[in-house]
Image 1 (cartoon, one colour):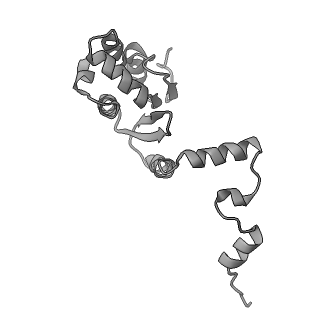
Image 2 (cartoon, one colour):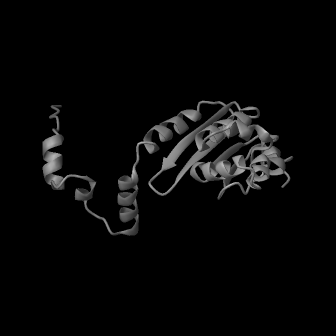
Image 3 (tube, one colour):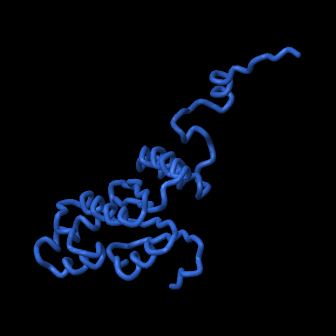
Length: 175
């Protein structure tokens, strides 16, 4: 991957675990001007961290993933995420994550970029997305699949007319 002629890039790195090594992949991206979106498998890495702490081969895997042995300071997946983000901050002025979880999984979507006014959009999305729960995702999937087409799925059994006539009070404007 040659980024030398690129003015800027956006890389989306969708890790299924620790399959992306710090060097050469992440380091090469960070040494060039661009933004990174990284899926950090927090829950899965908690298990990997536990095995690595007991001396299994996962120790080498985590060292390759983080780029050094600072992972040994972590006791949880969240602490490992924090260490990884600190590592990214050595190369980017803005590093933040959005937690995405339900009963079966937990991962964080990490953004590493240059600080600028556009990070307000990330902060807005973070605030909105971190409030979602399993039930919200289920409704969205039902809507997208065409199984849900009425407003009563959003919690209220009132009809659209009842809702709009009770909450929307038009103002009369005289010209």
